Length: 113
Image (cartoon, rainbow, N blue to C red; front, side, top):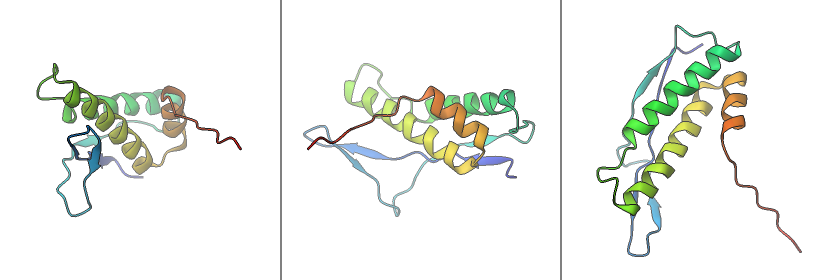
């Protein structure tokens, strides 16, 4: 099993209408390595500890330069959510995925007729 993962951060730009335009694969993507060789991901404590490391790293690399700027703040929150989701997916550990899903607020849309 891997013992570290790069935390890929989705780069976005806010346009005139405040819509995010996501970076292409050719664009540079900032990363942060989160190490977890010391954790046992087959138990809830290990999965929880790794989730907290991932969350903290995502918050650091996605922190807005100006927290009073609403656009930067919105991007920071979105960036953090994307980074956490990608990192959890990259680790591919069932208990970590369950831990993440229990703490995330997935948006569910039900299409009506």
